[in-house]
Amino acid sequence: MAEVAHGNGIKVIISSIIPAIEYLWKPGLEPAPKIISINKVLKLYATQNNFIYLDYFSAMVDEKGGLKVPDYTAANDLVHPNKAGYIVMEQLAEEAIKKALIEE
Image (cartoon, rainbow, N blue to C red; front, side, top):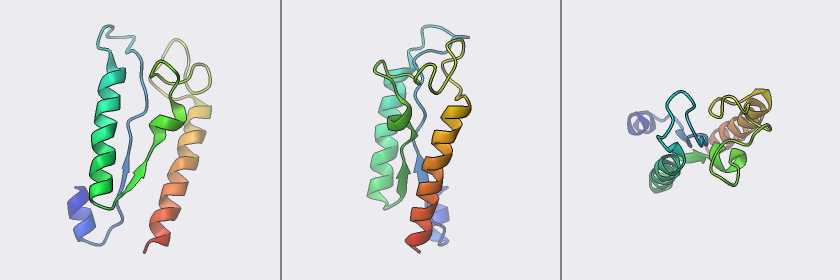
């Protein structure tokens, strides 16, 4: 999709996956290292193709590789951003969009 969009003159923004330390509804999956690995691939792909990389992960991750609790998620969730988390995401998305518009 990104290459088709780019080929049609659309500015592409590739975003990271937000951090998650555990899926409480399915324990034991250990998503944090998998998310880190996927984000590395996404960033490399964006860099290689001159796409904008929107890094939610770095702004929201705690020392264990999960969303910061209680800053950006609830302790009984660990996956979905709370209002403060969405505000961080909004600000980062707006910056990426502005960057895309400037590069036109």
